[in-house]
Amino acid sequence: MSSVSLPGMSQITLQFVGGTRVTTAANDVAQAVGRIAGRSKAPAPPRPPSSSEAHATRSRKARDSTAAGAAGQGANGMGRTRQQKGALRVLVSAADMLRTARREGFAIGAFNVNNLEFLRAIVEAAQAERAPVILQVSEGAAAYMGFAESAAMCRAAAEAAKVPCALHLDHGSSLAAAVRCIRAGYSSVMIDSSKRPLDENIRVTRSVLEVAHAVDVSVEAEIGRIGGTEDDLTVSEREATLAVPAEVERFYAEAPVDALAVAIGSAHGHYRGVPKLDFERLRAIRDRVDVPLVLHGGSGIPDEAVRTAIGLGIAKVNVNTENQEAFAAELRKLLAEDPDVYDPRKILARPRDAAREMVRTKMRLFGASGKA
Ligand code: 13P
Image 1 (cartoon, protein in one colour):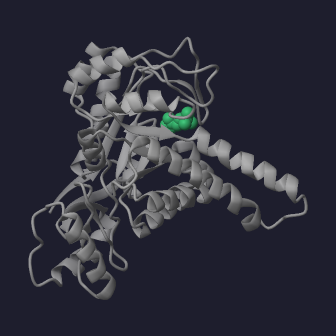
Image 2 (cartoon, protein in one colour):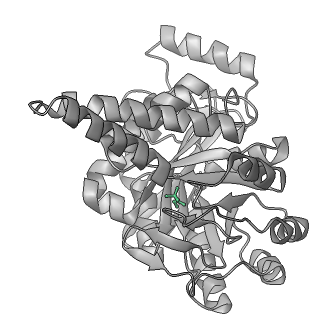
């Protein structure tokens, strides 16, 4: 077990639970130590279980709810841990998922959680598709939902899910924001310093890497500037800049992140016209750095272009706007059909299902279905 002090918190501790490394805030350690001390054998070294082992473990756990410790499960190297009553956060590292996806030529869908309905829609879609998934929360969405509430809600949903789920901070603006999410149990954080000069982007990213990797939380960064609007931030066409392959190589050499978002012509939100991704640039980047690449602004890109991008090293595709549109369209329809409805559970169920179907469509497009 090893530990590290972080700004604003006492300690984060690494430990092995059921053969899989997980992280926990210091407050949880006392409980954990008590449970682990109760075991007869020392935990095994980490090894991703095979699919059949995973299933055997799952059914054994279902039978034996009093077993001490937590059991690893998952397939294709995407091991996850199952938590016991009152145990620690046990989400999957996004790094493991993304490396597997890159190696096998598919992409993990990263879908934005805007509220409880989106959370349910995404997790239900992942289970229906048997797809590993990244639940991502922007700082704006966390503020909207309440930071603690959103973290608790996402953790609970991810821990109960039957497929590997990572919980990821989308477009973190600072080290402080990343640390806050790590404390709250996120398994992955993005630090977006792409608006800063390259040296500064590297410096800030390294500071997040140092903290996050010490506690086995994965890190995504961004290079080049992706246009469009995300939360309150709008990057105009004039400000958007495409990633320069030589700079990407230097960035990754100095800040070896787990995932790198590269600006290749996509944008957040709606496109005016059909977006044109710069595949030559993507190919040049892929040839220079061996890291899972991330496509932001995944809504509205033609399917064929998405497939081509995945073939060129994109291992994570971020989607928000199309899910929001599916939700909003169904909501409008429902309210028009029944102007007297007032129970939010009746109002929001159909829009939630529409968002779920959109997420499922994206998972199939990304080749992630059946990979959990
Ligand atoms: P869209 O809203 O364009 O799908 O982009 C989502 C995104 O990239 C989140 O980081």
